Amino acid sequence: MSVFRLGFTKFNIKNVSKICKTKDLMRTQIATIIGVERKDPEIDLNKPKPWPYLEKKYTFAHYWFGLDPTPEHMDVNSKIIIIEGNKASGKEVVAKALAKEFGMLYKPETDLNELYINHKGFDYRTLNKYIAPIVQAVDEKMFYEQPYHKGVYWMKMFFYHQRFEQYVDALAHLYNTGQGVVLERSPYSDFVFTDAMHKCGFLPSDGIFNLLINFFIGNKLLFLIIIFSSRLLLSCPSSQHL
Image 1: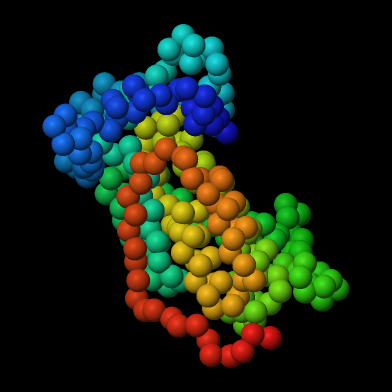
Image 2: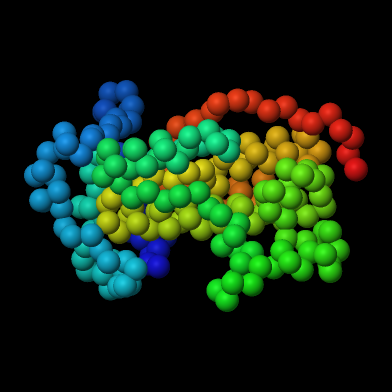
């Protein structure tokens, strides 16, 4: 994956101003989004072809000689839409519908099975009965059954790691092709979930975790629209910390 555009000076202040146009008087950012059927076809005709970042690297030479400049790929739909919400709140339905309506790339919510099951099909969770609880592979089912399990911290860290990688992939796709991306959940929401889990006693401390989140994503350039999907609110269980 080519993420060269995410760093260095490819996205300097001058380039960003071309994408996030502002009113001179009030300096208020203008943001809009257009459905595929109502989008002017001339917009896509005048854009360069998407950079094949999965097969071809974007090197320093491309940057130095101004080849394939990032702003020329961008249009009003070059944004990342994040659908937040609890389980079974309809995030997938909303995300797929938005991606279709606005011609964006849809990426489903991350799955711990991608982490716990290796390329040969071996499930590391089968080893849980042989190892100490603090190093067991905890998934969502285990968390709901044993919310005070000592390995919940690692489950939270693994979820954050996967969401962070998916978000970086979304940025790489956006910068290299100009196509917007729709995600289910993001690393930004982990601030909220970590705080709630800490208050319920599921996590011993949220200080280190929030420090890591701030270090990794605190200064990333954003093109975000966040939508919250909710059906019900759950309170902390009344059981005592085991």
